[in-house]
Length: 122
Image (tube, rainbow, N blue to C red; front, side):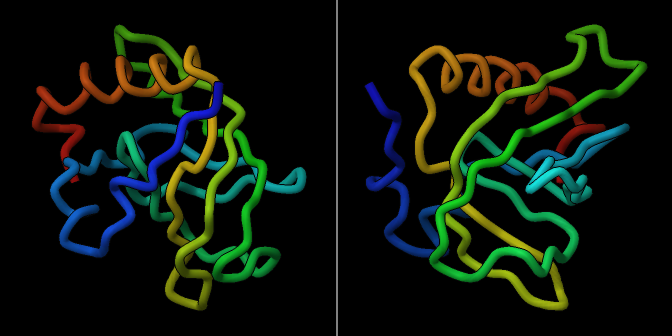
């Protein structure tokens, strides 16, 4: 069963209701074998440094990696798909589009533990 964010894709105001988390420690997206630093992320999407290999509207397969050596929750590494909302010199932004129910639950649990800690909030 695929995870869909269609209900949350109504516009910027919808996405902004979901708390964002800083890309702390070693936080990046692995895209086509390259590591792209995460600026912030949430249960529904991300913002990263620029990456020229993806265009707006494209659906990409990538892996989220979040490793903070001071984090008692340990590292996160999940393969997901994302719809790219923006990709330009200012950065790349996207929405997680599909993941297995187990991967969605893992991302939700990880984000849920982080949002209660001020040092993680963007």
